Length: 381
Image 1 (cartoon, rainbow, N blue to C red):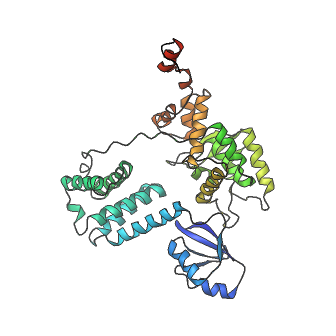
Image 2: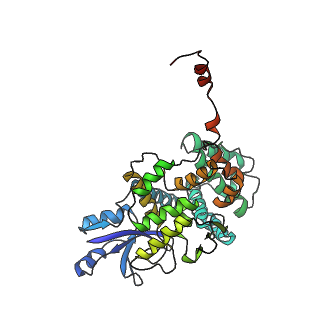
Image 3: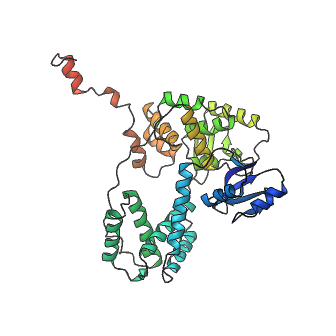
């Protein structure tokens, strides 16, 4: 039996294959395209694609997932990645260097990996849509016409169009040195989407549904300090300062460090988790027992999803809802919004002010005019 777990290898999604030595099985694995042997991990790993899984099934290799089967979210991710690869293959030869120059420029500017990935993917789709047209010769009217097509025919969302425009803006301003081309094009208004959160009763059910100490510690850390999942996986043992009761969040979104409070309850939970480990973490607070590196974010998302299902919570929320719940509950308890802004690591307080719309602290004192009519005897139930 082969045990599968998702991993990152040189920023590419891969599937780690754990198995006891079996010469026949090794020969079967060698027939999977893109398979690689890791000397350090002493295991095979293959591309994280549906094609790899189907090939394993065709070869008759028995396998199971360490944490889950392929989820709809991962299937969507794989299909999206394939879509980007297809788009890149359709880029005309004269336009392909623009994509490479844009990527090089972003690396030199020190943009985050997620920003580079988003911009490169959006530019791949844009350049693919342009066909054999020389993108460097496009006028503002051409770009307006293209964005109208994105909205009316391709039915792209407002968020996707904003993302596409940001990538196009970078291309024309930074690579082609035409700064005013995108500037004057109007942008679609984004819908105001309020943060999705869990109430205290739901949180209680969620946490009780998790029995694994490591998984408990991960979810409690996320909620207790309002961290992003990317921040949780990158926590190191030395970031937990029990003397000052602080957690050091290093190089978070926007390459910005910050300190957040360390709850005494969370400290006890973390100590219990570390003591329960067969192999104590060496560097990372939540260390993968297979890779020795940070715990995969996908695995944490799966842990949350499984806990939510076990707790009977039907809300359409992900693990980021723990961060939203943290901020909203602090606001309802009377914490100054400026402190919440710093704890969350927001650059602009307007981002934090979203939680004013979901907080019930002010709403509980508002009396509906319907209640007044009933109290005055004007209407009856």
